[in-house]
Image 1 (tube, rainbow, N blue to C red):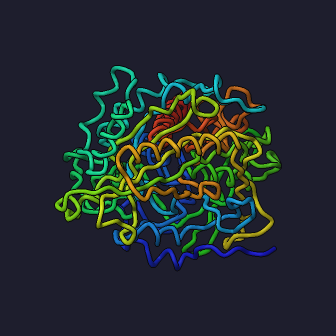
Image 2: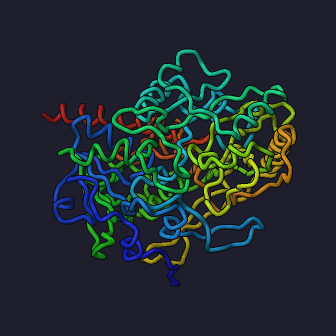
Image 3: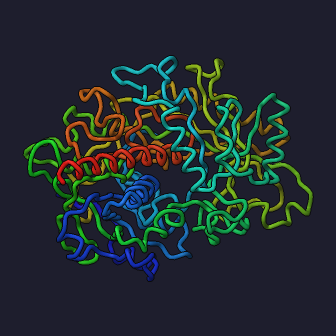
Length: 546
């Protein structure tokens, strides 16, 4: 079979940091990790895997985390990091197949959190039970738990991450205490806020996991860099390497191995997974990692692909694929940028910090539920600064906003495996996604609302730019759907795979409905909830065998 080119270990070597994160971290697996049975093996070091590992280690469990990518050097920008990430087969905007699909944000220690802007919204009550407005054939969009069930985990993470601001209108009472004061609005955000208020909107500060003041040993944001295209130079941003993995890297119960790819899960008997077959990308050698529990945290595309590759005599269609639901229901979220310029005082234009610092400091949810929007619900509008230095506008003040919308889940949108092989000899990932016409109508409506906001602000040269979400997205959901019925879902309310009792999914693939907001904080809250349940289960199991 034809092999599709991907990043080689040597290419990764040029960009990774030469020093380990701490004594628990090394590149490559080594025999000491393969010659024992771990309490938990966490696959993936991004937003959800790091949260899970932190909780499990602090509960006294022995945890091995494996990560396909490497630790990145501080100078590595987003463009270079993306060039080190394996691509996938996908459909372009015209529905034609291309090998330029995007199956993750970036492939490295900490995943996409090292480049994200820190947007940390709580989901709204509607996101947990949207069935009154979201109508789909054969797809249950109701979550198997509620916002109230997740609220305590939101609060814990908001404190750990140092989330600042973001009490949207209608936020339930009692949630304010876990967040710090909001960042000061950017010059563009002040213009957008005033325009929104004149339209009757209720703007609020974008909730950000970026320290406004020193917090938990981390510095405050100094607004010196473009925070969504470079690693944070001060450590103010709450990426998972800074907040969770670096403190764990000296813990005796933790081992972190980068440059190790999970190829497939292996079973010795029905109903559970015995080991993970891994590839040490340093040496090219395969290893078998045994653990009592396996936590899958690769993202909604990569996790589904891992389960589909895991064909065994006990799971001939892949681990967890008992109902043929693995990979199905892929949701990307629709999004689009709208920008324009306004005049500003010379001092504002001359200030280098006008275009740097937090990427977003104002947001609007006035069209989240909107009877005038097709289907009755819209999405988020928020400030979204540019992330590339050479595209910055210097002779005027740019107002750049983004709208984000949840998509209708469809079982026809899915992750699959190709007959082509990637550079490791594994079946390449296929992203088969076509937007729902109802969602495209909603996107047109929301971009129209964005244009109206900019016109109200007095902007000129207004234009739209596609995000290319159909080929991959940094917001991935739904391919290992949660539900009570094993015939219609992959995992239960705790993220445990219905047909493999010791496998848990903690990334966005568990979401039966994607929600209309940036999902990172919600994914992390789910991971914290699930990891506490895993720790309790293992403790009870250990006590029963004493």
